[in-house]
Image (tube, rainbow, N blue to C red; front, side):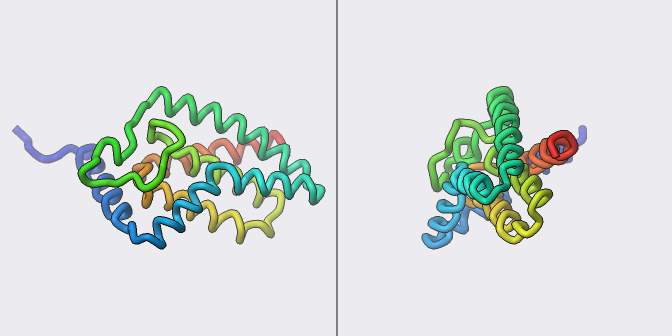
Length: 175
């Protein structure tokens, strides 16, 4: 009988280890910084940019973001409900601390990351000069979800892939 751990069990062990390592970066300034990034990633940053785009005469960008946001929201809520993956801190309370409140119960996929990636792709496609604002913010949002104990790395990767998978085709149809 083969007692070698399966690929999925090794992946799960690695993913949990990575969650624990990132979650241990919980020095007060780091937690404060990533909590602020996460709160802005709740939608406030993107709403502010949408309002700015409307005021600056970039209504097409704002409308594209609103349409993409609506589709993304419906898909991510459906995935959260159907997969019902527990958050890392809920599944491993002895090893991972949830350092800020979650917006919902489930972990998969990271909606913050999904929306940040989707919006960043759209914004940069229309207004490349915004790259230096939205891409670093998107990276910080994704990282915040891990440091704060809210998501597994695969939740964040799924958010990246789904966000990009929605944004790129939307550029073909809405641009």
